[in-house]
Amino acid sequence: MTRSLNETAALCKRAARGAGLRWGIAEEAAWAARWLAGFGLPGPGALASLLAEHEIRGHAALWVRTSSEVWRGESGALCPLSAGTALADCARELGLSEGREIRMHGVLQPLLLLPFAESAAEVLAHPVKLCWQGVQATCDGTLSIAEAEPGALGLSQADVTCCATSERGRAFAEQRLSRHTAPAQVWESLDRFARRTYAPATEASRLLGAGAGDND
Image (cartoon, rainbow, N blue to C red):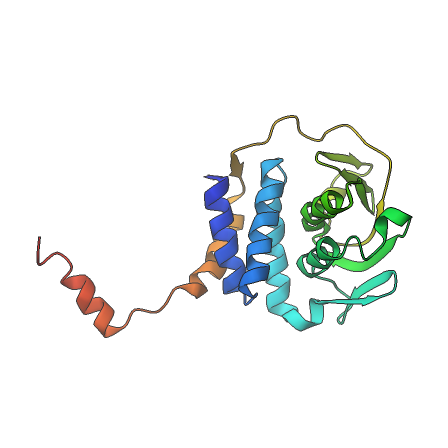
């Protein structure tokens, strides 16, 4: 099934909120999924899988705990939305442009970190590179990805390193897309979370709806 990027972002935002994430983080989740979808990457699918992990493990257990150059979550798994927003918000303070490397342990759906690396690169005016098992990705206004192992880009969990770099690879996509195609189960999973944000009908609202056409 195919949806426009606007529809995709709206669904992802509502799904993230339905999963219990705060509105600010839900907005970041929607933006990240849309950003990836624009490159033809499965951002919405990665988000659907991440929200399922939040449902199982709980939000607090996945939130970033920073300690010098090592970031981890309380449970041993780390939410990429939490780590990504910290990376984007504090890129300059983290000293990435000064050769510092940040290690993130057990990042769930590491693909979702890429949009935040792009935000960090904009702040630093310097390319930012993310590496995990079989993947090297560089963000600097364009996205370049070297995938050494088939399927590595879609790993469900991986240790990730982040650093500034002078490397600039070949652009991953020459033209951004305006629509995103995903398997039906991805949309169904996002819809399931999104439905939790719908207010249950009350007797008053049902009566109001029934009489909506009386004055036509």
